[in-house]
Length: 121
Image (tube, rainbow, N blue to C red; front, side):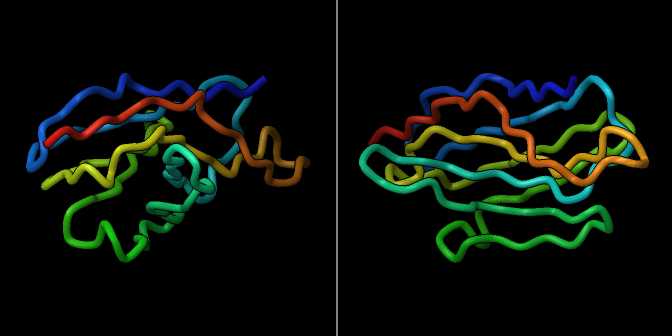
């Protein structure tokens, strides 16, 4: 069984910073891409950032230059450093990993539980 556990979110003033982390545990053979999604009230869940197993990254336009995704493979962990936060960044943030539980299994998507990030004026 694979489990993803996210660090706590929080309340931050506009212009501030916050770092989220998400660690996977359980039966893990390999982890492909690690991603962060977010969902604001009344909106669809959107992809915020992704990092491949090779370290390539991609970001949605609204966070480019402000957010940084990184991964620590030895700890099966992904981070999202969020700087210059804006009220429009307020959302529930979810991590998502593509994981092979064994060498014979296909890659399956696993989700973290989601953490609220609120940015105030």
